Image: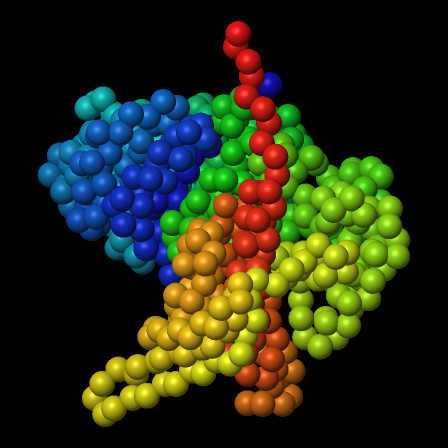
Length: 533
């Protein structure tokens, strides 16, 4: 199999995306994950641009990378000075990165209008910068910025720039679709044009402004490119860079190319979600291959078919990229969805009467604004009520939330509640950062002494959505809360015209879900210890 190098620029180009800001520790952690995944190059940043990147390279020297080469990014020397005098080039050397990526102007309008240099001086800047770094032992990759735009505007000049880079000692010429407006057919012809004049490997650096970044990366590879530069999850400026998770999966599974390590593809989903979490970005649910909805089935006809033959509605086995199949339950579902979602767990997959009752209740609740795709905890409680495997752990008598604020002081929120648990009348109160936090605190203060398992339940996400916007401020809201517990990550849902009541419903469902699972786990007989005698 032909090997394609994967060059990751999440830490540099990805950090230029709106809302993305990595700390030094974030960058080091992502660097470790990318190395474990087996990417060939990790571009750590531009050492001269900010103190954070300089600090990263200083600390990255302590990393033990098993698969990846660390690359520093920079620009050609400035006009009017020698390469040896250029502070940017010397910062690249000071980073001690094994590889250096230099970006230069390939579009004549950029040379004349942006750098204000002659075309001859621009070519000299490229060649002298690469030669200076190469003679000092660095492996230099040349990024030909705006290559495809430059090729259309002034073909002779564009090709002369990359030829000069190759002759100066670059090990690879990477062709950049910097504006993201090139079509796959134009990429293929441009790659072939470049290969004809440089005599060294070429790569591709696509942006996604036309929604074609993945297509352009694959077009470049099929035309002969040996490297793809991109970011995990496609984060980056404007519409983003090419999403390496999609490119890698397509290269390996669809086109048969060799990239990464042999067994690392199964970690692709894990790395994708780690980068989203570290960047404090919401995951893209329908992201190809690694999104939580990539192998999610909702239509009843689809689920019925998938249960018989997975390939009928799945183009690969989700396990190949570390993802999992999900069966969703909604008003669009059939009995097959309910059976696949929970039937085997509760041994009712053939009990059509019970399955029908569950489906009818789901349909009725969804008509009132509930959704269960992200609220599997609440769905399981519905099913348990229908089959007699549900029980209450406490009964609410009342709750009250009060928010008060004095002038020039932050608001103070206090929740009080009264409930009955195990025959005891319990009164509890707590202050919090808002009514939901206060209610959660009062609930835990009341119940944890009786049910210690609640302490293992942690809220990790909270979302509110208006259900019937036409009612304006009197509209219903749907609250979905995500939790982490020993059972894993699960969600619960509540719906009401009152956001506090909707949140209460979701909180109570989460507590009951946690306590039921804890009780069943403790009541399950443990296997007898082996007799070693």
